[in-house]
Every structure is written in structure tokens, then in C-alpha cells.
Image 1 (tube, helix red, strand yellow):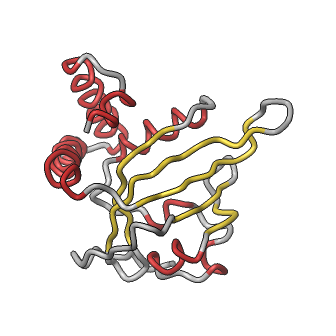
Image 2: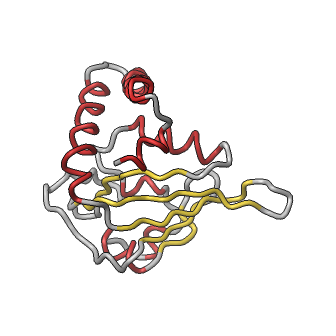
Length: 174
């Protein structure tokens, strides 16, 4: 995990009947990963437990989407999102993620849980991939990563405002 992993351009797939499952603590450290996660990501359980979930972050995944995801789950709400992940060897795989906070009996968020399924290829190719490329281009147009993320996040908000939809409405309209 010390060397920088470069994308290979090779796409991995998993079966429609499989679900990738992971759990993290409040800071995003993995506390559980199922066998489907481990197989696709190419890591052992020992390598991922305690590691940041972004161990599978692909560089073509817009940072602003993760900002939206974290803002949402930290507020105690669930979110659905399309995500491209990167395996230990640089291969990648797309998922449709459902991320939820886990609450204790007092209603306090104690951890996060994510189930990922096979995404719809048509939605990926026609909407998500072009949108994410646009967002990455915006992020890369700024010299500062934080400024780039904020600028691309605003682009998402502008798209939603133009469509007169919330993020959830947009995702489920696809």
C-alpha cells in the first residue's frame, strides 16, 4: 500500500447476484469487507481492516461526489451513488452504491455501511461517465485540489438546479 497504484484501464465485473459490502468507522477506516469486496479489490482482509476506505479510490472518481457522499451520511442520511473503484493492481470496477449511517439506540451515528451492486451499463455510458469526466476536468482545471472540488461541487449543484431536482431525484430519474 506504500507505492502509488496507477490505473491499468482494465475493467473488472462482478455478478448481478453479488453484493459488495463494507463497513467503516466514523473516520472511514474499514471495519468489515466481504469476500466480494476483497476479490474485486485484490486485497486481503488483513490489508484492508483498519485502512481508509479510499484504498479503492480511482483517480477518475470526482472528489466532489465523495464530498456529497460524506456530507450526506455525516448528516445522518443515506445516499445512492455511482462509483468507480480501483483494485490493488490498478484495474477498475463500477458500482451502484447505497451508503447508510448506522445508529445506536440513542440515535447517534456510530459507523457507516455500504452495499454495492452492479450498475446499469446504459446509465454509466450515457450519463455518469460523461458527467464524471466533466467534473474531473473542472477539478483538474484548478491548481488547488480543494478549490477544484468546490468548483466541481458547484457544477453539480448547478446541474441539479437547472433540472429542478434534488440529488436523489436525479439519481433515480436515470
